[in-house]
Amino acid sequence: MPERRTTPRKKFDYYMRVDDDDAQKLLGHMVQVSAIGLQLETTVPLPLQKDYYLRLELTAELADHPFIIFLARTKWCKIDDIHPNLFHVGFQIMEITPEDSRVILNIIKKYGS
Image 1: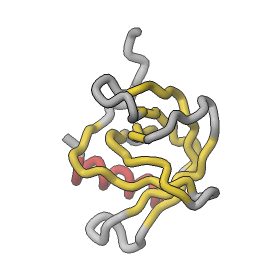
Image 2: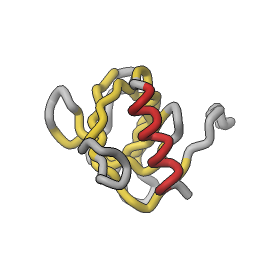
Image 3: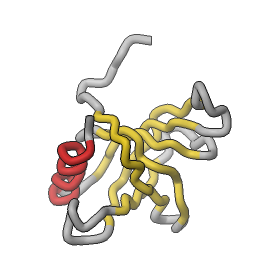
Image 4: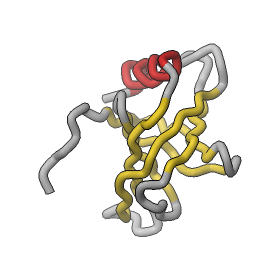
């Protein structure tokens, strides 16, 4: 399948916890991020084209608040090639405040490789 991504994603070694803010439960851990999307590693498959309010837990070195919340939509979901009990889910960021968008860019700068 040809690459359709227009904004490069950054991988990082630091797993960041991501919760479903509506359900108040862990959804997965962010393993890649770009200015317009992210990839989560989860233990369950997620339905496609579903909107979630994602709550991303932050450290003090990233922001002066403990988390950000933004709206993201699932775009794809696949089983991990090595660990079949894990899933990788791609999200497109649909709504985010300018301040929280700067936090995402800071995460990319600080942890991205």
